[in-house]
Length: 69
Image (tube, rainbow, N blue to C red; front, top):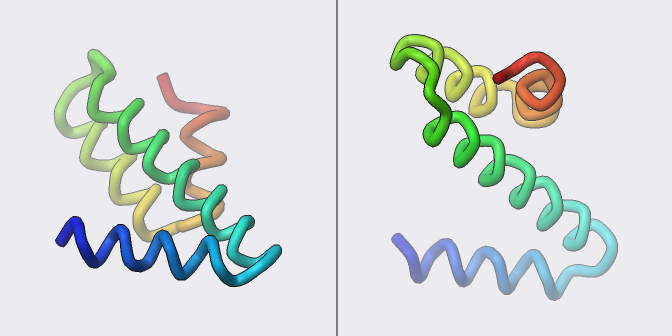
């Protein structure tokens, strides 16, 4: 799993401006997941925010940063 992730990250880095934007998007999603799961919120809230981040790839993280904990 980790090797696939690293291979994908290297592909993203090697594909120019679109790759940089994709990498920034990936970092945003990982950061939001980290913030969700390290917060003191209830488990149901964590699951709902995680689903929003996962199923709404650009809107979910932005909503979490604006409206989340």
